[in-house]
Length: 379
Ligand SMILES: Cc1cc2nc3c(=O)[nH]c(=O)nc-3n(C[C@H](O)[C@H](O)[C@H](O)COP(=O)(O)OP(=O)(O)OC[C@H]3O[C@@H](n4cnc5c(N)ncnc54)[C@H](O)[C@@H]3O)c2cc1C
Image (cartoon, rainbow, N blue to C red; front, side):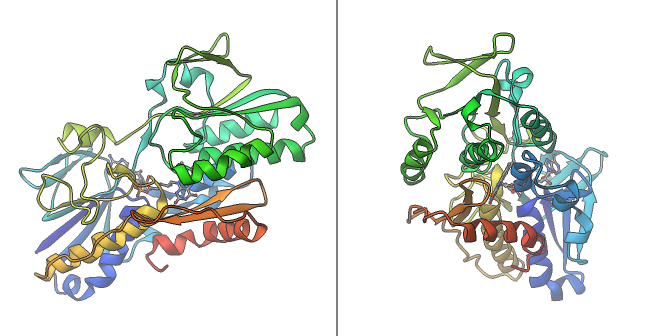
């Protein structure tokens, strides 16, 4: 009996479970394979919607679905937050105290934000990387009549590397539409010497920011925020006052991975092609939790799920696992509230943003709707 356990019911975990259920249907019906997805909540949340939630442009019913509805009937769903992985005994321990034995394990618990790592950020800053944060930011934006708005990338790597750019472009359009752009100064900060970690995206974004009158500050590493004075202080010794701060907090892997000895420098050490966890037999990782030099993006988790599912199916059948992930990434980039561009790239080919258009914006809107088919492993 092959016991495949998947830890985490987000994009990567859900897609890999559904692909395996389809591919291994004969073995599952014969009782030779069992697929269990262990996650920490009964609902599946589509995180990219938080960008729109921050502008009041979506509702919870649009980005939540019961996890059970998204899973193939041949996948067993267990809602039990993972507390530990006992790699020597090959079992996952849940919060309930239950132990789940595995012959193969897929780690897909994503990344989480840790604003508390930056002094003053939780008290003084808004963010849109969680549902609560995005809903709160919406209320702040609705009541914001004028002053300086700083979008500051504090922690790198973070989920969806282009989302902070999307946020500042959407803020520009939002304030223009409300006739308030003259009363608002928009400032975008980034920790290295350009406006994005990817050189090609930085080269494209810098003139886009400038043409909208958005001020940029690079080499800007936030050390602390003074909530009383409303000032950001940096490691470089500079300070920047703000009326509204939208900070992209540091991210981390869920704590159970470190306490189980499955991280190195904070993330799960993963082979860039096979997606096997380095130093651990029978364990794969995908999505935001890996240490790979790829975007922490849903599209990445989706493409990686296909590699992991193909290799697990091969292993179950005693065949060599031959599928390779080549770094494929696809990201739409909103450049306002009704225009967007996109980038597609991999380990060997850099991104080349195309001219923004309404069509691409509508393609992103359409993708947001069809995501539920992606999660089911259909597209
Ligand atoms: C504002 C925003 C905008 C974004 N926009 C885009 C975009 O336009 N395009 C794009 O491709 N990506 C985008 N992303 C990124 C995308 O959402 C993530 O990269 C993607 O969800 C990662 O998939 P994952 O499966 O690794 O993790 P997740 O989808 O985060 O899933 C992890 C799952 O594991 C569960 N889990 C966590 N801890 C435990 C535990 N201890 N035990 C059991 N289960 C656990 C979680 O509840 C969750 O269900 C965006 C993200 C944000 C926040």
